[in-house]
Length: 556
Image (cartoon, rainbow, N blue to C red):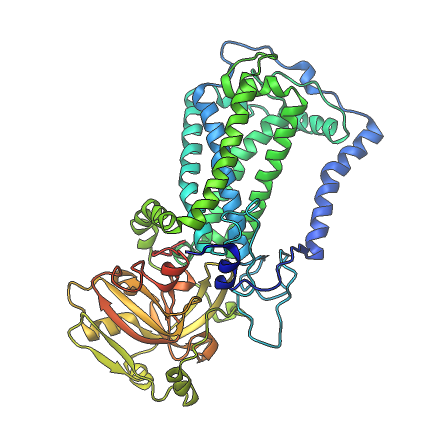
């Protein structure tokens, strides 16, 4: 356990350059300017040429017994629970983004092809530059965990909160349709579109329209905005997040294509987050501008009292609780990260194991899809043993396979090549967020498993590397035999139809396509079949799982 931030900073090896920076592709800027012109610009043009349009709020229909009145307890609870979880999701999501602070619309993530980057660092062309070096850290005001640079901890917070956020939203939507509250959000006439535009023109030109009493109904622009947040933004956030899962992407290739590709899904996921933030800022501003105390009473205590401060105090209490929990979350991230890792595994590990982990990868990509650039990651081996083997092109290398098997073996690269060759073109999904498509050629794990015949007690395979983890010690990772036997699971000695380069894992690297990249061990030295992962290393299934609190099962 680190005792202070400087000690942690030295141990975690932050890149030296930590300046904050936002670089946007000129084409992206053009799109932003076009969007602003088509919204605010056209609103001003209409105002200057035709004057203010009629305010539809002046002819609101009369309230009937069938219309919703006030906000029932379940809706008020859902509103504030949503606020709490969304704050955690956004802050942890920003920390995940900071681990690869570049967003793309292409699948290969080549340097300088990003449409926006949050780093001043340009990828150098004169040396090997790893994706780990490119990562950033965030101030804890913005990011969760903040300062502590581990995407594993950020992912734990993200995936702990996402299921509760979705459950809360699903319950709210179901109850909405079982009551008359759906009428608040769902338009029943296309007239809502021109009415919403007329209201927008008023706001955009700094003319406040007549504000209906939100205790009974919203104006057209509010209705469309709330409808969009609940029924458009939230589903897009969920689907774009699912599209980044290697287990889902490698089985249902059509899903990421809804966004262009996997990186398109990541960019859309970010844009949805920005939309949530923008909506929240505008939402709070309008609440304040149209009667803060009265509106707070509506959504906290379900009264239409304009003078009572009860709702204000309750709402501020919830906000202060959310802020206080942010401090607690930061403390947990630093002082109890293992508990956080275990909690996330308890919530999602079993869920993933029984759902998306069962998906079998399908061949999809062709040679024309191979990425022109493939990010390098991992700490190159420095041991004398590996250096000597590399100097002789690994001709003396022997892969040792043992543990709970009937037939332990030692096989050279030539021996492995004689057994069989499988060539697959697949997408690599790094936990940091980048991706790349490459051809991998090697021996199917199934052939090796059939050869060594693991005992019934063996449930996992441990893959050891010649390399070390970021904190030292032999790098290793574990996989269930079920995943090792899935299609496209191989030990690769070939990349893009050439001998596997040293920087990408020679002499052998693992490919199991329903998992994230850190599970695909490079520079493999030996394989061991065991009963459980709990007696290897610190007992969490891999070097990154032990030291950086990554997931044992890396399906998403």
